[in-house]
Image 1 (cartoon, rainbow over the protein chains, first blue to last red):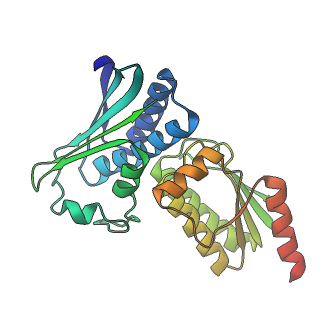
Image 2 (cartoon, rainbow over the protein chains, first blue to last red):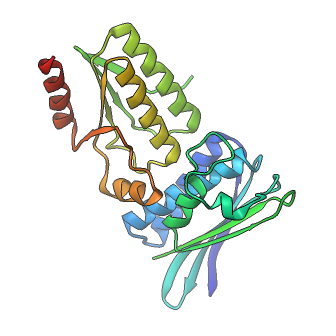
Length: 134
Length: 120
């Protein structure tokens, strides 16, 4: 697996969530991703970036364009230094929310991508990696 | 402050969302619409999202709330113009917009609203 390009987008205010979506759209287009896959990825980014801002107290989205065995993909890491998620199983249940949302962000985002990795512990922040291939 | 314009056409309010909305903008639209429905005694609200290339759970919730509050205020909301990729993504996300009336395009949406007013 080779990294074609990479970078970081800060996520601190609402406008950054919009920027993260727009950046992801551009990256996916660079990979030649189909519109439906691109839409799913951008929607997942919107959910996760909002979580980073609201629940993580701000953080970053690290991005990579990957080449592997003739396929190209976009990998995104959302990281924050927030309170972390105490109960991962509960957080990955449809309809459960610690805030005022619908509880679809995390579970929905997981359904919209091909690879989803969650690394979190109370007081240790949250790191979520998602990947979508062309 | 940035705002999404609300147009009035007879008994109906028309909203066309053409920008990539941040969350506050969506909430402002929700507030503006409820105020306009009450002030104008509108019977219907048509929301055109044909220019939106993404609807996430936040925007989905806003649409559901607008639909709910407009129906309490005796106005029918119709959501029109959803792109196919957006529709597929919404279903996969788990958001099926229960109680929200939809139409394929503005023309059909307007007809739906006009029929409703005529019935009453």
